[in-house]
Length: 157
Ligand code: FES
Image 1 (tube, rainbow, N blue to C red):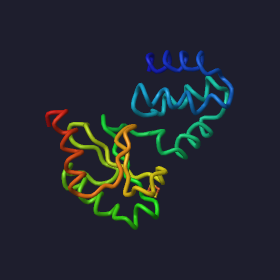
Image 2: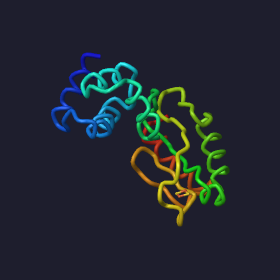
Image 3: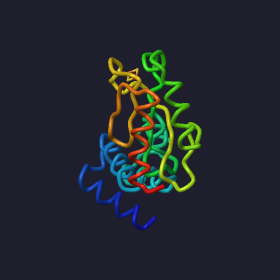
Image 4: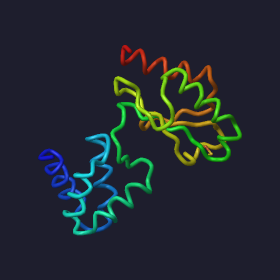
């Protein structure tokens, strides 16, 4: 918690302590700690002098502001209508089969978390997904196996 407190102080120094600083500060925490813990949200509320409910409400509204522990690689498959029509369910099933996890779960070693997200703005090239900040489009099961294969090799799983 000491480290989180210091991190929040640094972020508040950079972005300020006004209400508008809330999202950049929370993004900074997620970047460093991979999610927003309850303690971190309380500390942010204290620093910005707003309610913890407001911090939590904002965090839970944005899917990129995770409030649960997540894996090193966060896979977010677009669940919006166009990707749905273009076969997002098959994409999800393929990922679930390869990683042996369901949506919302993290793989045993903590490498991968599988999530769904709203439209990523790549509808014309759907189905689309993000792995952390990397966008992957025109997905099909073969492509998914190749993409995940790369990450798995990198991690030597
Ligand atoms: S509907 Fe999937 S990227 Fe827009």
